[in-house]
Length: 110
Image 1 (tube, rainbow, N blue to C red):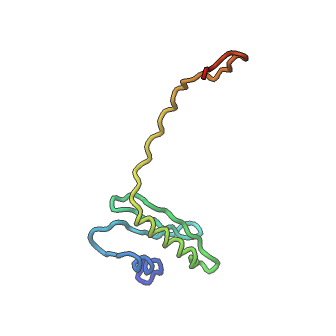
Image 2: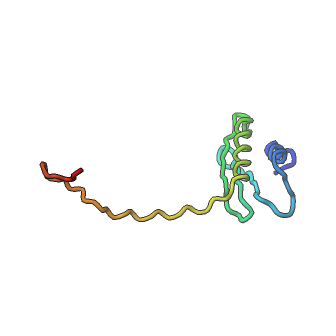
Image 3: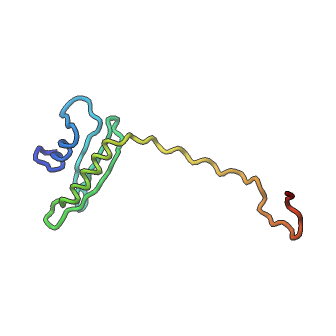
């Protein structure tokens, strides 16, 4: 990102930005259809966030959209990386029969 970028200024005010060395996350901004796309990746290269912001009539990202994107980027950097979701368990076999009981038959005693 360019040095005069308002998103960079907001992020580097809230967090420590480094040019070299160990990094917790990287933020990339790239053009997308009708706007821009913010992508946050962790140190291992896993994507933590993809956020899209549309251009306004002046061909720029609006201030509220920029603030929303900045908050989303900071939240993505700070939250821990989520492991892949566990596979769903197979449905359990039914243990009770769903057939109706005949009328008048005693079912239980107290």
